[in-house]
Amino acid sequence: MTINEQPSDPAAPARPVALITGVGRSIGIGAGIARQLAASGWDIAFTYWTPYDRRMEWGAEDGAAASIARELEEAGARTAAIEADLTGPDAPTRIFDEAEQRLGPVTALVLSHAESVDSGLLDTTVEAFDRHFAVNTRASWLLIREYGLRFRGEPGSKPGEPGMGAGRGAGRGTGTGRIVALTSDHTVGNLPYGASKGALDRITLAAAHELAHLGVTANVVNPGPVDTGWMNDELRDAIAQGTPLGRLGTPQDTAHLVDFLCSPQGQWVNGQLLKSNGGAAS
Image (cartoon, rainbow, N blue to C red; front, top):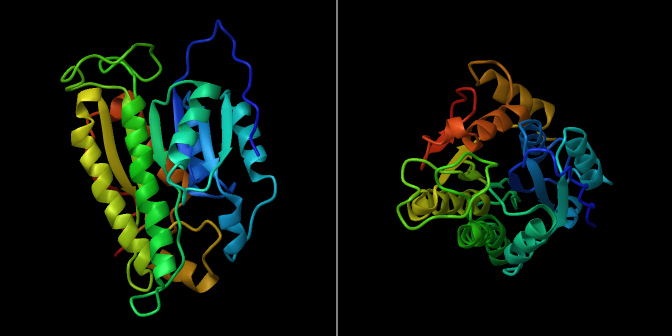
C-alpha cells in the first residue's frame, strides 16, 4: 500500500524531506515524530510494516498509514507512505528510490523502526537473534549508508534551501543533513533487542564523523519508557513512580527533541547519545 503524494504549489517555499522509519501505528513514537516535523515545515516519507504489528500482542492498526498520511497532509506536508520489510537487504535502496521519486532528495533520516521480542540469554533462538540484528542493526546501517551515498544538501545552507554538495571539507562547522536514530538501554530479558540497539548506536555515532564532510550530523536518542500500547497498568505505575517527574514519556516528548536536532538550531549537537527520559533511573 502506498499513499499518493500531494500536488505541490510551485509558488510555495521548498520544504525539506524527512524519511522516518517505523511509522506503523498512530500512537507510536514514529508517528509522533512525523507529526512534529510536518508541523515544523518538513515533507514526510515514512515506512511501515504491517506484518510485524500483526504478530505482536497489540495487533495491526487497520488503515494506520493512510490515516497518518492524512494528518500530515493537513499540517501542510506532502507525504509518501512506503510499506517495507527491513529484513531484506535490498529494502533501503528501494525505500530511498521511492522517497526521492515522490518527494525529492532526503535531508533528514530518522530511524524509529524496531524488531522487539522479549527473550533472554538462555531462551533466545538463533532465528530471533538474526532477525533482530537484520532489522535493528543491518537495515539501519544500510539506510545510513544509502543516505550518505545520496545526500546532496548544501553543507553551508539551512534545511530546505536548494543546493548541491560541495567538496570534502566544505561541510565543516555547518550543514543541512541530519541523522537521528532511536535506541534503548533495555538488555535484561530482552537480549537480542538490546544487543542490536547497542550496535545501532555505534553505527550512528560513527556517521557523525564519517559523514561530517557532507555537512551531516548524526545523533542517537534514548526516549526511555514510552507507553505506546505495550505496557500493563502495573508496569505503568512502577515506571511513573521511578521517574522524578512522576509520569511516563510520550511520543511528543521524543518528537520535540528530534525536531530540535533536525533544525538549524540543533546543528551543534553531533555524535551524541541523548537520554530523553525524564530522569528515570536505569
